[in-house]
Image 1 (cartoon, rainbow, N blue to C red):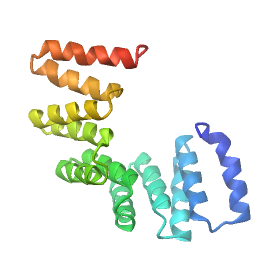
Image 2: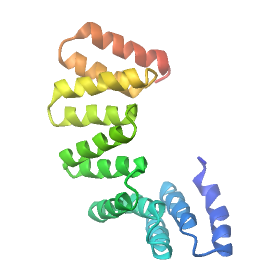
Image 3: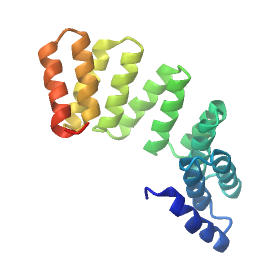
Image 4: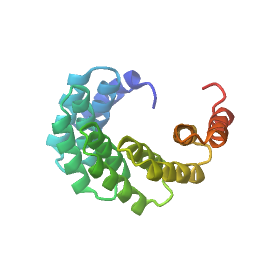
Length: 191
């Protein structure tokens, strides 16, 4: 659902039927946050956790809203709890890794991306995030390897082609960079 403002009345109606159902609070928290009502998003995320402390979605939504108001440490803590509740839920891994990267906890982010690949060996998004993270920490050989793997796993990923092209360009591998950037135009000609 892309129009979150239209979702809000529907979710509120659902809460009138069952005001203890954590997934509804999680949805409302996301909808409020996506529409710029960050404090309402925080409140609904917290209500979701209060109604079901084991709800991974409520904790993720609460963390998402918290991150928008600059409460990154609490957002990280909520995502760590959510991950402990379900060690195999990939979206939590991605969100927690993003928090770690923002806090320059790069190795912890790398470890999470590696765990994603252990769960889903062909996850091109995890490969791309490893590429970007290794680039961030200056390990360009590893970065280019993961970008190449991401392109192989998802040949239509313009982000992977673009990151690979940047790395190739910086290494003066201009022919490879041209090919990578050309693939971006193939898959996203208006971009």
